Every structure is written in C-alpha cells, then in structure tokens.
Image (tube, rainbow, N blue to C red; front, top):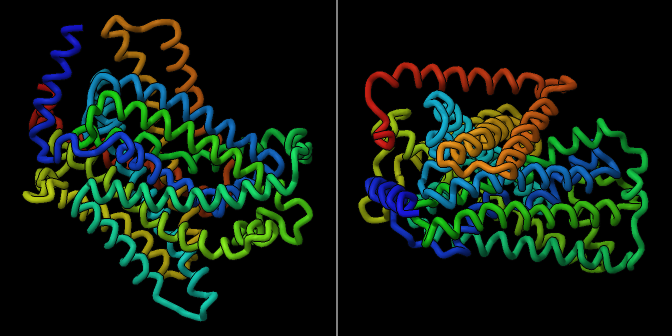
Length: 465
C-alpha cells in the first residue's frame, strides 16, 4: 500500500509540470466531460434511425450489446484511473505496461478519434442548423457555420475548463430531459403492453443486428474522456473512474430506452423510423406535445457544439502529453499563463477538426453524411485504443501481482469485444466511400508510428524517467 501511495505521489509531482489548473473540477463537472463528448441527446434523433435502418426490430438489442462492450472497456479503464491521474488518458495507461511503440499507437489512435469525432459532430451541427434555418427560408454558408462552431468551441476550451464543464453539463442535461420527456409520453400512451415485434426480433437477422451494433458503438465513444482531466479533477483517483463507468452505464440505459420507445412510437407511422429526418418531431406531435419538437432541435444543435467542445478539450490534453513525451512538437506543451489551458494544442485541434468539414461541405456533402463519414473514421481510432487498453490492464496488474481470474476474464472479454467490433466494420465490405475508410485510417497510423521511430532515439520520454 505504501508503495502505491509513493507511486501516486511521484506521478502527481510530475503532473505539476503541465501548467494546467489543479483539482478545480467537481465530480459532476468531471462526469460532464464524458457525458458531453458522448452527446447522448444527439443519438435519438440522428443515430438511432441509422441503426434502425440496419437492425430493424433488433435496434434495442444492438444498443444493449454495444452497451455491454463499452462497459467492459470502462471497467478496464477504471483499473488504471484508480491508480494514476494524467491528461494523457489511455495513452498513459498503455505506456505504463506495454512496449513504447504500442503506447505511441494508442496515443495517435486516441488523438485521431477525438479530432474526427469533433469533425463528425460539426457535421451534425450543420445538419441540424439547416433543419432550423430551412424551416425559416434562410441560408448561411455551411463552411461559415462550421467555422463559427469550431471557433466557439476552441474559445471556450481555451478560456476556462470550469466554464467549459459547466456549460456542457447544462446544455446536455436540458436536451436529454426534453428527449426523455417525449419518449416517456410515447411509452405512457402505449400503456404497459410489450412490443413483441422487438422482443421476437421480427424480420431481423443476426447479420443485421451485428451491423447495427457497429453503428450503435459510435453513440458511446468518448465515455473515457474524463480521464483527460486527471490533473484538473478534484480527488481524481475516485471521481474519474466513477465518471467513466457511470457515463457508459447511464447513457447506455438512456439509449436502450430511447431506441425501444422510438421503434414503438413509429409503429404504423406513414414513414419508417430509418427514413425519418426528424423522428423527435413526429413522436412529439404524435404524443400531443408538438411544441417540444422544435425545442429539441435547438437543444440538439447546441449539444453538437457542446460535443465539439468536449472533443477539443480531450484531444488538446492528449496532444499536450504527447508533446511532453516527444511525440509532437514542443510548442504544443505551452499553456496559457492566466487561464492555465493548453491554448496552442486547443487551437490546433480545432483547426484539424474544422478542415475536413470545410472541404466536404464546400464540395456539397450534406451535414448528415459528414456526421456518418467522420464518425465511422472515429470508431476505428476508439476501437484501437480500447483494445490496447484491455491488453494493457492485464499486463499492468500482472506486474503488480494483482492479477486474478476475474481480471483476466475482464481483459480477454474486452479485447475480444473490440476485435469483434473491428471485424464488424470491415466485413462484409461496405459500399463506397465507407470501404475506403480503413485505408485512410491505416495510412494515418503508419505515419504516426513512423514518426515515433524517427523521434524515439532523439530524446527520452520524460515520464519514463
């Protein structure tokens, strides 16, 4: 026990060098980071219909399986989060027990995942913005809208992490409550009867559910992002593991209930749930609370900004630690003297998130397609990082003589789940442009690992000692 405390104290001493604010975020604000990056309010109107288009009556089951896989990873992450706190998140966890090259792979994969998720939700922001603007006969350049969204997120992330966390918490909380209100009324109007179509998986095959699971996973990604607040959270060895596990469980239950309610609510509807551009509008009108529909649209729009903000906060802190470890430019180590935020890393992350959205929007690609394209790319990065952390947990506990049968089972189950999910994104080969995304991600990772081999002999990793 004394050795663990000494180790924790050593880590804390190293963390003071990062220039971030120390222990300023409450447990609720720490939880807000993970919840906001997940952006649960965006899945019922955007992702659930896409999952239904694949899984049909197996939509609820697809979300249940996805939740199970993510909870396995959350439990693995929590093992590390109880022992150490760092802005490097999963990168530091992998580095503590695996060869350096695997830590570098985790770092580049995680950074890629956060940036492309920011791009994805910016695409969702464009989609919802045009739903609102189109209803009023207004038009604004999509590139300009994306620039405004990314710029606002970077500004808030740079200004004050406490303001960022509180803003995200309020925005997401209100949006989720409105969606839960509509789904709750929908379930109430249908009474206590069970929707046997969903229970019996009517017209659904195992292959379609598997494809639905792959897409449902994108609803969860980012649940671990509270780990990037290791320096800034109060009592991080307690609050961060709780935030990671709670976020995966809480949003999982929310998604399952919403999926069940939406599929039930669209029974007999003139338009399929999978083809609906505004499912919450239909459900709200059908439930007799039509006025809530437009309010939810506004809430989801703002939640997209909150999710972009959460992605930038997480990615900037991973990039900050990568710079300290020699994997990125030393200029990215800079933190603002007054706000104590990674200003340069935040700005770069915002630019990288904005550029693909700007290019695609300029070429006429719609916001919903940008959401799908960039979200698919993000899943590759998350699955890589999650899988490596599952392996790292077993090695970490073994080195500390704490490895038990339960830990081995957990690690193996988490890794197999991630491998299965990865294969599910590759086979069967999806149509264009999705079939090219694995090559894009592989090319990025080759560049990242290649850069690691270039710099590894130039300077030692300061956290390695």
